Image (cartoon, rainbow, N blue to C red):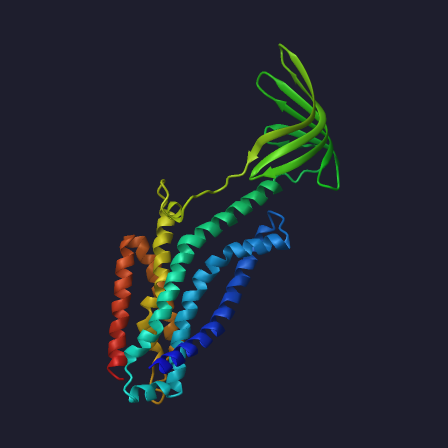
Length: 339
């Protein structure tokens, strides 16, 4: 029995890799095209593009692994059927339930990986990606250069006399008009610093003037920081539970949580369907295997999204038990009854 089980697992493994790698490559290209659209707003180096792609890996794996596994099992069983190996196994007294038991363990293992992926890794990667893009956008808002018109830096009007090659500026003047006071600052050099999403203007070797109807003040300084002029909104969370179930209820995250749990369970819930589609009699059946696989995947994912919109968290029980029961009935009538 172990030899038979190992042979079936080996057949599934070979097909799984041959399906997963092209599917993952296609999905990666789609995500890279999506990343390329960010360059219309922000400047990204090759290293930063690679970093963003790395942040998207959990999402890529989450959507490609279960589909690849289902297709691999179905095609592996179909190939064994076409080679008459399945018929030989059944003729030797091996029951179809042995095939189900053989693929059940890797299916459970994959489900555990998918649940960990979306529940733990996905929030962390999504938050890092969102914060990185916000960080780059905040930098893009202050792509300063010398001009006769000047710039707006938070509450300050900023004039730059000269651009330097080392991303610093010379002959900088800032002006801020408040309700009862006006402030004028002049510095020989300036530099933009982005410190954890907080943009700061570092001024060196300058003087500042503050004047109102009542007084006039002058200061000289070697170094001055103008802080908190523009703070980037960064997402924060302590635990995955706080991300998925925050104190302020988020219907979008709750719906995504339900859908992702159902997507994670797809490998286990569709074992009977894979066996029903893949196990055929080579001489009498010309099963439209690719059509049935496509319809099975589309139907499950459509039901997962639709039911969570209609009945909320009850979709977990309804779809899980309903799909498992329905595919088991098909398996009993089509496979067990014949073989």
